[in-house]
Image (tube, rainbow, N blue to C red; front, side, top):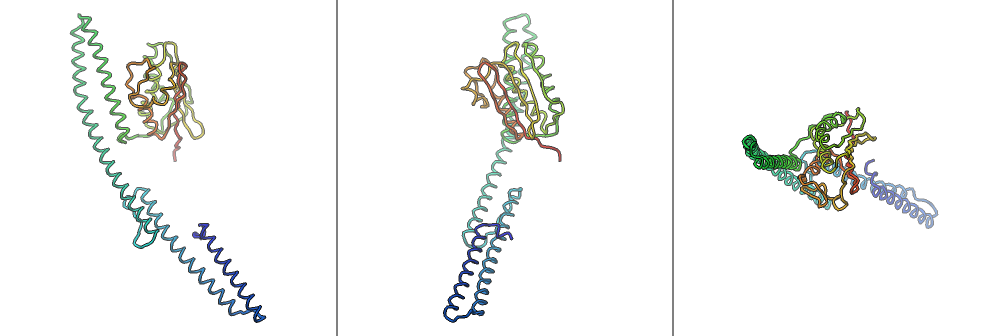
Length: 345
């Protein structure tokens, strides 16, 4: 019986039965001492009283159990998405005060959820407007800069300034795009379109993307992993996350250094590991590298915007994964991206 699943109720019934048994035995002993015989009538009446008391307790606790089960059903309905689910609390007593508090909490949570939804909607629209407003002047500036480059071919000093101008425009465009990406991730506006993807194929795309830069800087990108590993993910966002880490590795390595991308499946985990033998991360910076716009005083990189690694972390967490780092100053860094495996049903 369900009510006896509660140890306290079970102990109460055992105690009541024990008390009734002791009472019955003592009564019969007293009658025997005075009258030298046992009383069947007293014995029968005592058993009847004991049975009635136990029945009343059983009825009461069964009723309370049904009320609690009904309350649990409403709570589970709310947790499953029914925001109108409420516990019936049309009576008095401490239990009904608790139910009323739970209903109040549900109402408050609904209000907060609605407010957050409205805030996210406002943020989404604002992001869209900002993106639209910035693209037009940036495109115009790039066109003007291209015209200046053509006109300044005979003027080396102007040509140099125009080239620097182009680099700064590229930085601004990258910054704007990264700000939009991380804001969308924060707002929950960016929907992850997950499909089963081949990890090896994604890593080869990343290698191809950075191949020219690595060759120009005399660095080597090495891939290592099982070609059969499949991962339920948003392909574009995972490539974005790993690419940001690889770019960070290229920014902090020298000619002749290596960047290794490994992937593996361990029991119920998929791990992607990006390892380099570059400058490493100073111990003072290791706990800050995922902060936005963070720039280390020990870093020689002057072009970074400080958003690549925060975006990578946000993407990994949006896939219910986690990212860890192990680094030794002057000896290189290792980033480990870990994801739970979700198999097809």
